[in-house]
Image (tube, rainbow, N blue to C red; front, side, top):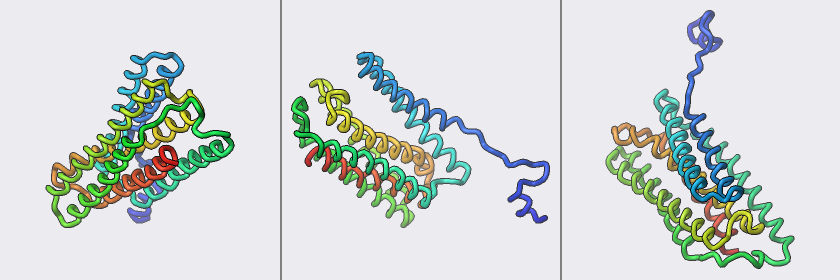
Length: 254
């Protein structure tokens, strides 16, 4: 048997080797902590507990996704463009289910949004949209610079993209805080349930995108950024941008 054939079947006496990674567990703990934050806020009415759990959850999810991606890059695996396409398709179906259910219940309701829903400002989501769209242009420009071998220019525009993504999350957090201060939350009515669920789910995808970018920072600053990795990461970021158009149009303006 040839060496390649033996490797394909796991050479006799040498079973296939599986690497152990702690990062999926870290990301899972982060997601669990985010769920605890909701419980602390809406069930136990503990603002401090919710803030602590939210802070821990965001950090753990960021660290988990970034560490897992960085570890894969260290083994030469990187990100698969095709696999990312399938992942995006699966995630798109979840958003379709969210928005489909939202419209079904909306059409069944005699008035929408329900009477006890506060007026949601329209200016901030417009600014958030501009920021997110700008971040799609900046990551595309960064990829173009990398394609032409300009590692320094790529790093600059990657950092700009990270700052824009973080700004979007900051504005989203401010909006949530403002609405909750007015007494509007996930349990207020059906609109509140969908508003916080859909915008929160999208925000989670932004966090994942920023985590992937952070995972590639070390190689970028070492001047070893891989074009295939960043094209795949950029594809995911464009998906997050496109989904936001559906979210902002359906939830805020229609």
